[in-house]
Structure formats: structure tokens, C-alpha cells
Amino acid sequence: MKRLVIYLTITAFFIAALSSNTFAQTKSQTSKTERKYKVTFIELGSVRCIPCQQMQPILKSVEEKYGKQVKVIFYDVWTDDGKQYAKKYNINLIPTQIFLDENGKEYFRHEGFFPENELIEVLKKKGVK
Image (cartoon, rainbow, N blue to C red; front, side, top):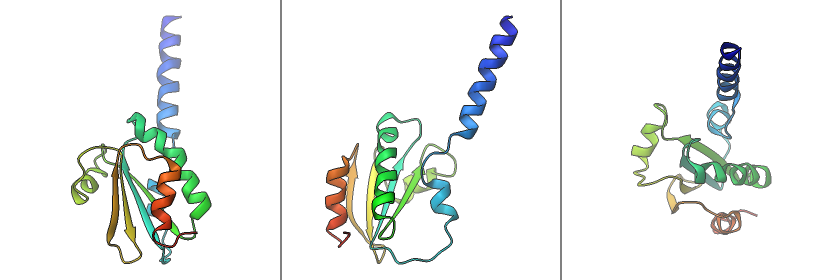
């Protein structure tokens, strides 16, 4: 009986871990279209960081509301693939939000949880409606 409980617990854990699809990293990386966005919004965090997890619904909301004008990207900087972005953007803590204009130049940076209403004000500075 103990073995069965342990087996089921481990199986459930692996299924949950493998099926969890965090917002954005795979979605944004598979997008091959070269669309011109007014803003590229980059979230540098981790799926294991609580404030970063709290940002996930906000990322999804921004993409749903402004997806034609704003490219939303999430990098998990605690993974082997994501570590390079922590270095590239020289971040000190997570989550960090970086906003790039249509030419790829950084125009705003925020560290920590970023409330959606404040984040939208940053997007509006570059003409996002």
C-alpha cells in the first residue's frame, strides 16, 4: 500500500511538472512572424519564484489586450536556457520587467512585482492603445 501511494505521488508530480505550460517562453520563441511591435515587454523571472508566478496572469492579460502592439516574452532565468538572458539584460533580482521600443532600445525597467495598471501606463508611453 505504501508503495502504491508513493508511486502515485511521484507520478502525479512528474505529470504536473511536465504538463505545466508557463506563459510565453515557448510561445514567443516559436513565433516566426516578423511583425513590427510598438513595444517588446520582457519578463525575466522563474516559474519557482512567487512574485514571478503572480506576474503570469498579468503577462497573459497584456498579451490578450495588446497582442497586436506588444510582444510579450518570458524568460525563466533559473534554467540553463534562461541564464543567458539574466546576463544579457544585467538583472539584479527577479522578477525584472524590461520594455523595448520598436527599435529594440530599452526605455523602461522595473524590478519586482509590477501591478497591471502601472505596467499599462508604461506601454502607453510608446503609443500602445
